[in-house]
Length: 548
Image (tube, rainbow, N blue to C red; front, side):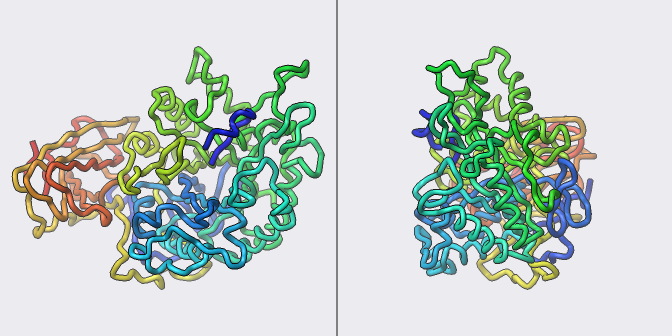
């Protein structure tokens, strides 16, 4: 979860053939696309893979392992593979995994796992469940970033250590994980400690500072100690270092005569990193990370600026954006999110995504969160852990770089992870010369209606959604929708269905987690494409029946 600088915030929670089919039989040696090949390193402010190809992480957070449950949330709601399938189909190429030391202790037990939906997880330790998620995510070309979110499951801490988890244990656990995943290119690195922040008030602050020189409070020095120890255990990992909230480590005191320093979100202030950089023995493994949230999460002064949201880039430049713009190091926005119920939050998110940029040279990010049970932000999926929040997804979609190929143990083939009868490839965007609906799919009894919307357009491409409603008297199972696009339009990505292209026809087949479209129910199929957005897609059909 995220926290902010103010003390009162302690109560606030936080072309054809251009798109590859995402399958289960990709080999590690052939891994390409959104997350690249092999381990990642940095060149200036750019992430690159083992071949020197530019890479951008566009992912999300899947939390739970940092809580008393000690494993991913949502395992009570649906099969664990289905979560990952859907993430990949939506275009997320990285999963940031929060954990606490409690999940790593001997005898730790995962709970809240539904034995009917996830029988293969029953009785496994938290680390064993994580191993399975790493293996399967890697087979889909995704990457995993581990995030030490809390020193214990009881809650976050301003400093990287607490009495129950001293610095020595923090470093030792990180070295254990680095060795455990050595040789597995799916796991790319360590987000050392989540949201270091100020505690107490100036001039007597007791929280995490940056560049103050106090060995017990200077987060920059601690990050160097832990980062270099991890690189000794696994020299291939990225070391992700978050910011603080107030560089002094103390909150501003409105009642004294000391000038207040600029303070930001917990973990979101890297304003001193240029002056006091993190010094690693392998400098090309350093990634800085910041957290950024909306007004609904906590009210910050910059939300009151009359020029909002046009004032925000200057705020971001000051706190962390300069590191990327000056080519000092890559920046990962490790957490950002909102329910988007407040229109101001929508403008904030749109501005932030625009600021981070498109394509592989944009800033890396992991959205908070996949989970719907994040109280102040909600999730990409709703309370049923399946239905996609289209408002959020439509804003994020143009910036996503879908996973492609497979990663995993160095030199090994992910094909060895054969698909069981209960495992299916994720719904994905692909281009096929022979894509067509199955003739066995029954047409809806009574017809259908369709609405087509161009959600966003830019030079050379667009994003659209097609909403199809079954107006018949019976469910359509499985459902397939088709529609026509103008000549010259080529599919890039799709979500909420397996979207394919044959000539000027797009076909959207039902995903494995929602094969049936009930009578009176609707489904919204989203996609991005290259080419003109006008005229809009037309001629929508549901299982062969023309929709009005």
